Image 1 (cartoon, helix red, strand yellow):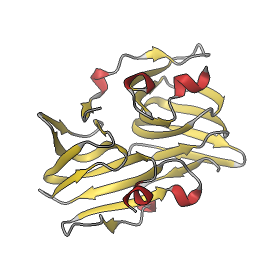
Image 2: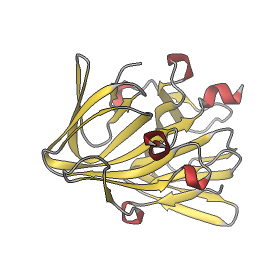
Image 3: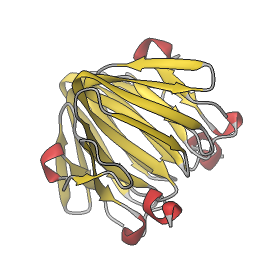
Image 4: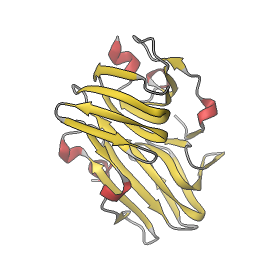
Length: 116
Length: 116
């Protein structure tokens, strides 16, 4: 593989699987490219919520807006520049703030393959 | 492992190994934590330069400032919100802009272990 650069406009946003809210994911690099990781951008509508048992390690970097992630007895509020690590196996609930959120994500391994 | 949230102030910045410029990396999560990836923040002084053959897949998300990454015949300029993927084996030269840069990074696998 070669070095690549991406900007938000490069991502083709698709509704995140298994939910009907305004939560979108746009993969830029994934397993089908021969990469061990998935890279993409996420867009979260205001007050959208996603609950999930993590099939992969997922790192979210908040670029705009904000969201709150809860897991076990911990709750993390993340704004621009903050990072949330959701390890494989963690049971998380993500709630976007009033302004929604734009995130960058990196997962290991490829998250679509892990969902089967 | 449990879900964790981080902000730039959480990172203990250390000079990036093997170079004397004002380029700093602060790991937040790594192999010693049992994670398959490394997560951290980077800080690049104005006009600093780093040339490297990638020992791991490295994803940089630019949070502040900007930098230019060159590899093979490609040059990418990245500003806030942009993502640069430097796959394992790529030979890259990174040059920070006049304002320097703050980045978030995710590597697979753990970059310190891969350096040996």
